[in-house]
Length: 274
Image (cartoon, rainbow, N blue to C red):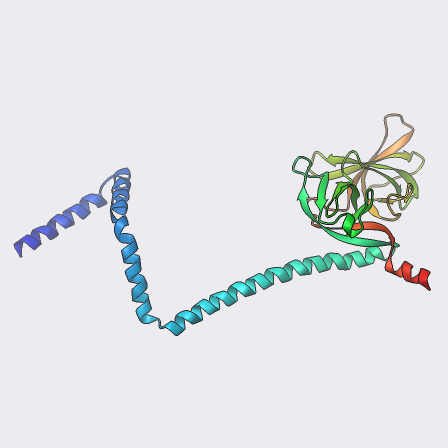
């Protein structure tokens, strides 16, 4: 009896000493005790699991597993529905765009972006087998995105219009003035940009003026929106005006695109047959 009393006193003193130890010493003691208890951790967890099993019958356990499975399935279906809704929204926008394009549109997804030129090129999951050919225009629901520059049987690479190697014959909708749009990559603000050169200095350009494809050269169908004027200046020769253009397509978040085939659209094909 007296022996048990002494053990309790020693244990109490030990606890008081541990509580009043400096922070660093307490942490070391805690780490030591945690490591010392490690061999007992797994058996104790097993005992607790068995104890829970005494209060839950097999039917309850099976029901819990079934509920967890159904929750996981519902979450998966929700994510799929959200992805489909986003794609359908883009397709609905494209219906309005395709109304004035007399060519077939081929839907394609971006599968790879060029890590060395994030803003300039991307790889699509459609190619020769799907009717895609070199120099076909690529569009988004917002407007023109670029053109096809490389192709294989099942993939194709698109050069975005913000690339300096991309040149497009364009015109200002309000003024009916023409010029050449060339990509400028990213601006100092981190925004994709283009520049329209060789605009007659006789016309009065205003910020916000819409820029569209002119159709000259035959590569790009006429009437595709390229972007809007941000600011205007005389070029170095003083003979023409140049305008900075902000593209309407958001190259940062592109995933679904449409290649403009050289084939006739369904409505035109039907009209020709009649």
